[in-house]
Amino acid sequence: MNDNNVSTSIKKPSLWSRFRAWRIKKSIEIDHWSRKKPFRRKMYLNRSLYAMMAPYLIMFTCFTVAPVVMSFMLGFTYFNMLEAPRWVGWQNYIDLFLNDPIFITAIKNTLIIALITGPLGYIMAFVFAWLINELPQKLRAIITLVFYAPSIAGGAITIWALIFASDIYGYANAYLTDWGIIHEPITWLQNATYILPIVIIVQLWMSLGVNFLSLIAGLKGIDRNQYEAGAVDGIKNRWQELWYITLPNMKSILIFAAVIQISGALGVGAVTTALAGFPSVAYAGHTIVNHLQDYGSIRYEMGYASAIATILFFSAILLNRLIRRIIRKVGS
Image (cartoon, rainbow, N blue to C red; front, side, top):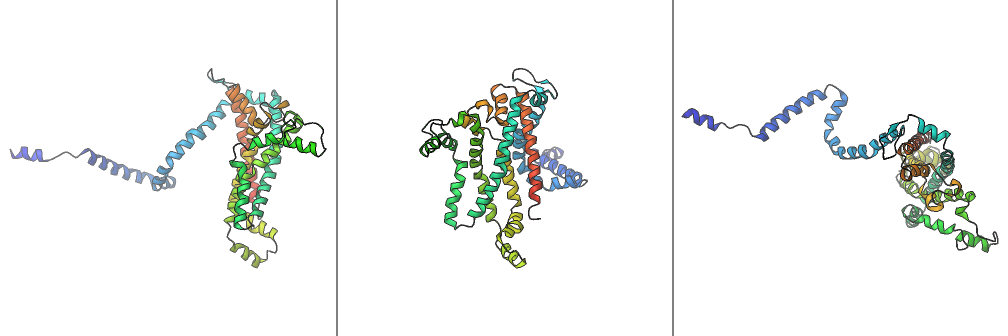
């Protein structure tokens, strides 16, 4: 009878206790495993940080990395959304460059827009930020809002559509008529000669906002004591301050602004559609993004559209690397 009492008094470990023991055992095993490689050890010691990053990394992988990889793979297929993708190799890229004159026109228009609005918009944003940063605080805040307004005004393009309206009520036609320069309205957005210059003007105006604001923030973050130290070391004028103190202290902001400017210059499409329609007259405002939208959203030739997107993606990467190499030489 005593044996029965002893046996009933001994209880089996609870499920939670067994789980804790298993977890401790596994933690010891993983700890020993992580010590074999420096990278493993780093991952193990920072496991709580990686756990906090995991939701973002999972979403970034699912909604950014995976679509890019899928687009790259689909660029080698024929895929019309109704049938399974069919492998065609390099045929889409051959057709783009050899059998698609509209794509060549889109490349030409995109390069013209990028080569003008990219560097010019970047330089203008920095010059305006540099000059406005020297103004009194209250006046600086007002002018900063004025420059940033185009990027937050969703319907800002309609203002330009009104300015370049093709009838006498368009501001450009009205003023030019009053000044005696023209005698009848110009069809600005229905004439292939004027579409691309107007798109460049509008894109240049709209690209100042975000870059201007980031550059203002970068200028405000520079320690003013460096300018005093530079004066002691022999810096004689504002241009030397700009080259040897201001720009080197803003390299990270300059790279950020350059990436935004490249993305905006290569991604022009909504502006041309809003101003000149889709497609524009004689494809005068047709860009790579417009061509991508044509095949991806209207014709649903996803393989061909993916090839266009891949070309645009790698073009942005190459331009980004070129800009980074140039900015690294600043202040040297």
